[in-house]
Length: 474
Image 1 (tube, rainbow, N blue to C red):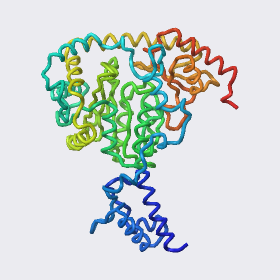
Image 2: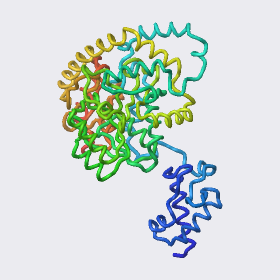
Image 3: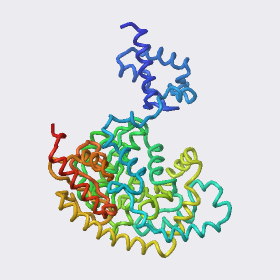
Image 4: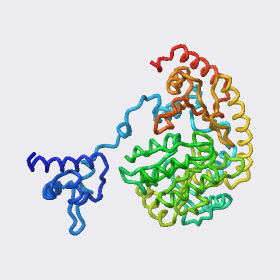
């Protein structure tokens, strides 16, 4: 092979890394010696390739430092980010986007036991309407202006007082309000990750964790989840072998299993994280559904290497979007800049004011007490009805609105979801939650959306049909 062809191969490899977003604007390219060793070519070949790419404007040389992706030319060289291409193609019936779209776009007649929120009638609508009436008399600036880059101080102070109840001592410079809980996680991924990094998640876990991570072009590794938290031995083994940059989890009322992290497991996770320099994002969105607080990684760690995120979409309103990030002050400073760049400020001032009004009022705690009691009954009733169909809860949660259930033998959850959708019922099949695709025999049920008897009629008919025609076993 002649040197010209070898030079072309090096140039093609760099172009491919930029197009695939492994290298982004301003990123440093591998050193000449390093790339020569990796590709089995001479250093002079790499020098020639880099010089040609610099002449094209794709990369730039910086004296004494090396070569970098050009900020002016890299955008056109990068392939458009298509989430469908960010992972291996899946049957759309077991695709997290499919589940989300079916739930979000369904009309009022469709039953949604697979969705991730409570029915509108279960939410504190009276308090929200009262807050809206109050806002109608607010200053014009609140209704018209952009929000503060960190979010309003009054809401941040209220949240800090609630954190203190959970044993988390933090100051206002450790808290940033965001447009939503999902945006909070996206900002952290932008800040902490580069394409090609490894991220550890639970298996199973909330499916949008996977969807968002694939958008950031990282390697996703799963760790089996148990009734007391992640399998610690597997967790430690993955940290040693894969050296992940980040671990994302729910500690309280884990989604989808409903399990709760035990104190013993929490301490072992933090010890392993310290040993391997691992950062942890703890999504605490279900905290208020617990009958009493459980172990929190953020509280045990003191917001050192653990980041706490959350939002109010499960307890107050999915329509009024606002999330938060609690972490080290120096990280908050960088995240503020990212939020300005991607959202031009913090959450909607109207949304933040609505949430502050409801949380500060006397009705919120009563609302949550009533909601917890309502969910106790709904979990028990749903579990009993499902068991009549041969669907058994993997674990009975202490709180929350999810049941993670094993289906009868020879029933595949994706096929059951397809069959139920044809009858106007949206389900959440197990493999959308599993990075290893090992949860085909499981289904997540939202007990608050399982009150209509039609849910069980459709399930019964679909299960019977699949047992008679088990084509998935062919």
